[in-house]
Length: 435
Image (cartoon, rainbow, N blue to C red; front, side, top):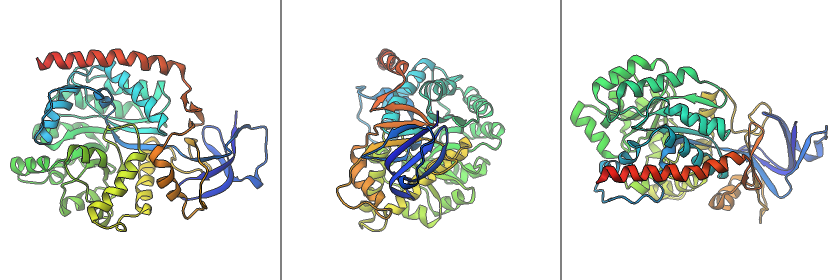
């Protein structure tokens, strides 16, 4: 049945309607002011006292990291490689398809409660490679009804043939409004020359999804081993198909930025993770100077995107030592880039409350204490809502996945409980390996 949200504030990072409506089914049919609304036997949803915005997109995630929460291991890293060795690589080599599935359930529940309904994930699982992306799809897209774009990070730590095949086969099989694939690679420092040659044979026209210069160690490793920068190396192997995600890119130089721009790449920034790992911050000013499109991820650190929006803005001011070099308009550009990128891969229109766009919507209680207009609406979200962002209702393709702050799918709740058992088994396996 066609639904209509009425009496709500409507905002999509461009248009703002003080008292408006949205008519939708799987897609949006129309949006307008309440004075023009005509009820044609729609299912009415009263949005009084709420603001309606498009649901959010995470441009770089690690869903399996959900099960790292609370895990205590011997941990005293001196550099980024030791962070990988002492934590993340211990976790991912113990992950099988059951673990992948249940981490996807937990992540989906928490993402949707934070208003995130499209996730671009970078997966790793040592015990089960084949079928791992399918396991993610079953959890995130089939079970939770979210949109997901998945890639397996090929690395010399894993069975290369299986990892390459997992990417290739998933990309070939899925290209729907809910599911698509990218060709995942871990990072230059864990990819040999032979591995990159094998990737090239299977890649076709698919964009890659890879960590680039997340720490200075990755860049230094490439220069020592191959006498070139990371981006020069990827270009030499012919891997930079248009639309590739070069996540982090903290230590790339101007020549590398030229290469990213030339091949129409996207840099996915993850500021909270960068600060947590102590690796540095992306040079947003340089990215803008080279006219590179930046998308926003969270690197698996949380299920929130609004916390990333806050950190990007404040970290840029701190890095620039000025409060005006990076503005709210620059942040909106990144948010819109993320919508456009994900929508392009899925073949749908995301991120606007306009006719023909997907009905991926959030309803958030908000009564502005000061005048709210088109010109300052994003300021109200940024300074008034993003610090405590809990949508009351969440829709994906017109379907309610969160209603009155609760997940609507009862089966997800039972799966969430089962996930605790799976996480406990994962922890036991990690600790057994440590002994």
